[in-house]
Amino acid sequence: MQDILSLFPNIASLDLQDYFILAINFLLLIFARQLVLAIYHEPDNSAGIERKIHIIRALSLLVFIVYFFFYTQQGKQHGGAFLVLGVLGIIYLAYLVSQLLAYVILRYYGRERDVGGKKRFVSTYHTRLLSIFSSVFIGIIALISVVRLLGLDSWLQAGGVIGFIGVFLALTNAVWAPDIFSGLIILNSDMLEEGDIVEFHDNETIYALVYKTKVFHTVILNLVDNHRIMIRNSRLRDFTIHNLSKFASAKGLRESLRFKISYDISSHAVRTMLQAAYEKIRADKSIAIESSRELEIGIHELGDHAVEWRVYYYTKMIEALPSIRQQLLDIFLETANEHQISLATPLTHVIHQPDLRVPHASSAASQ
Image: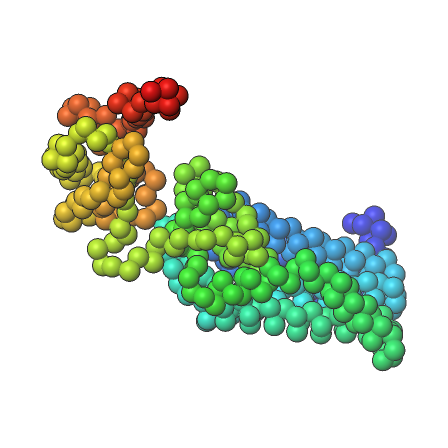
């Protein structure tokens, strides 16, 4: 015990307030994960959650080390320890307050939705705007507090620090500003919300769940490959996005399948085959379509080689749309084989024979 006291000669000078501060930081260091998970309803292993946990733990550890080491070694009158601890404390409090304010704003002004089978408060235009304003306000207060704590409290010095940050933001606005404003525009449009199922084309057709709309980017979950994709908000606005969750009829989403069938097959035979396939689909309860709706069959286009038929069906299980299409195509192919109708697009060739009844120009002249 004497050895420990000799290592920290001023430990006896710590009062109840000091022990309280040390205990709070120690608890935050240990229970950082539980605190962050209680505030943010995201998976435990997500990158955003891990980053917030690491930041809280790092700041807690720094405050704990600085407070304990310098105060027990140098005493409370040591100016350097006070400045270091003060700067760390201001940064720490600013970060915690901004996170707590963002949580309160999301709770009061956010919208509760089912995202990936879980209830969660999702961001809206108002929550994002209020969060940005609150973070900027807290950041300015923290900056001024640090400047004054370091003794740079003259208007010239403080203005120089703030001016430097202003110039830096002005020079880099082309990097961050388009994504922030695009994110606000997306949220304000109400056409793309967390939990929606969307379809867009980015070198391939992507069916995805909008998982999280953040300040600079949007995270979507690819429903086919089952992985996450991060897209900049400004780039996301360049796509033509089909929001499949916002269907305009109580019947559900109206989807279609296309088949190119030879002209040699009669319309009656094609309709009979398609209707027979639909009856099989109706009998299979595992296929999530609106079986009470009749199948709509029509000719979409008369092409050069084949007739393009289109069949329409309805579904409300938007998240299962890729698997529904696979199941339907499998049944349509099987039924077409049973009816001896090929679904392969035929290739036709027309050979033009010369008209022998027209005499050649040279022979006509000789006559």
